[in-house]
Amino acid sequence: MPAHQSKSHEGSRSEYKDKDKPTQIRISNFIAAKAVADAIRTSLGPRGMDKMIQASNGDVTITNDGATILKEMQVLHPAAKMLVDLSKAQDIEAGDGTTSVVVLAGSMLDACSKLLEKGIHPTTISESFQGAAGKAVEILEGMVTPLELSDRDSLLKSASTSLNSKVVSQYSNILSPIAVDTVLNVIDPTTADNVDLKDIRIIKKLGGTVDDTELINGLVFTQKASSGGPTKIEKAKIALIQFCISPPKTDMENQVIVSDYSQMDRVLKEERNYILNIVKQVKKAGCNLLLIQKSILRDAVSDLALHFLAKMKIMVVKDIEREEVEFVSKTLNCRPIASLDHFTAENLGSAELAEEISTGIEKVVKITGIANQGKTISVLLRGSNKLVLEEADRSLHDALCVIRCLVKKRALIAGGGAPETELALRLMEYANTLSGMEQYCYRAFAGALEIIPFTLAENAGLNPIATVTELRNKHAQGERTAGINVRKGAITNILEENVVQPLLVSTSAISLAAETVRSILKIDDIVNCQK
Ligand code: ADP
Ligand code: MG
Image (cartoon, rainbow, N blue to C red; front, top):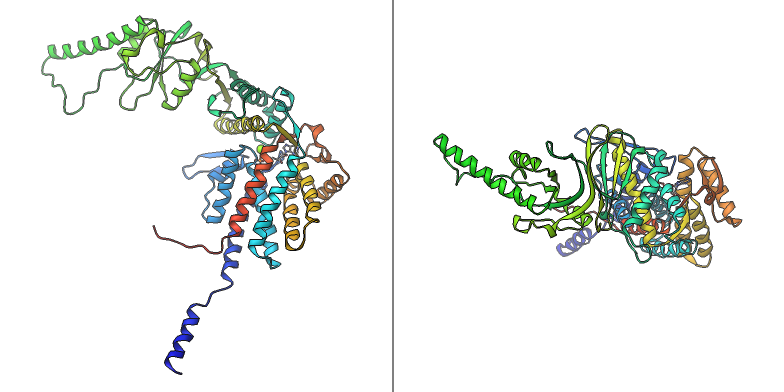
């Protein structure tokens, strides 16, 4: 064979591409991502199961929240990580629906693999899914019940729906009003279009049960008042300080070498005077409650200073974390004082009452009746053990997010699989107006949405196929709010069960899930790079 011929032959061989590779990569991505979706599928809905998550350090978490489960899960495959991020994105966008979004994505991936098997090109599927998701959101928006923020009843129902599916669901009668009232307290219902959840401070304290949780229009500190001083102050004049009341730290360079007792006496006396001087100025400004930010360099307040403060009947709460300062200062409507020079009467906040109270096991300090209080609120959350307390905190956060969604977009839809079934039906109808591959993909997308009622039924111990077909029939006959009544184990008008949820949770779940599925679909290779 001539040399040049053999060369060209080799050349063509080096260009040869493995045509199967993109398909294999796609299949492996789908399998990895689906594994994540399947792992949390069983925790969807009020009859969903909980997960016990054990961290490598032995910490145990019990939760039903999709975002939390996925956050704690050790996921290695890059495509599976995309589903973890999807849940996170839903958590940020809506706060609830973090399980639904992943379950939906899993089902859409299933639909994709079937379409791919039929030989439809990934780009066609991707574009159709984008269109279908847009159409789905449009249809959902047409199904809503508008809501006024003055409609407390509906707000309560939505908070309860979100809490129903939690480990702490038996406390939803306590936590729902708290979620609603806290949010309404920090916004102006007529103008607000968002809620800053930073204005709601949840303080967790062990002891008692979730029943003992209370809403506090004021401030709560988990630490007790420094011992020796007063524990109850009426007509409090409050200062929030960021400087230390302790002798400056001597470091290696300017260490004082004390050689005899008289010198030592002098040093001690100087320290004493230094601290006394600060304490006197505090008293002079009329302050009787001192809140001290924690210092990273040294003790923010020395024992001697505490002794003097106690003698002058000044109550002290120390170790206030840096992150808390903003909230405390906003609530008290006074700025934190960074140096003694600014310690004057006009920089103090005032309140009717500051008092140390016992929660059974430990003590907390409560400040109420704050003059010109900023728009903030505190919740003292209680629980009998750490696992319950942590899950109650996460669940309350979800409920707060649900109310926030309703502030952002004042629209409600039914729950219990009703919106997904109706959506699937309408989308199928719409698909009939399309042609070719597009119609095929739209139908697959519509079918994928039915995973929500399917899973709700499965988790509630019902026959999923029978339930979903019955649900489909009812919706086809025009019963738009027929949903799965998990308590009765039947299909009823779900609005009568008070199962309602914000529109935003569902629309965001569908759009975000479709977006992630499209990105996974369009990957045809994984390239490892060395950093
Ligand atoms: P997510 O993390 O996605 O919010 P959940 O476990 O909270 O997952 O389950 C939410 C689903 O459960 C929604 O589809 C909602 O409509 C449904 N759901 C909640 N409460 C009920 C109920 N009482 N009856 C039927 N379905 C319900
Ligand atoms: Mg939920």
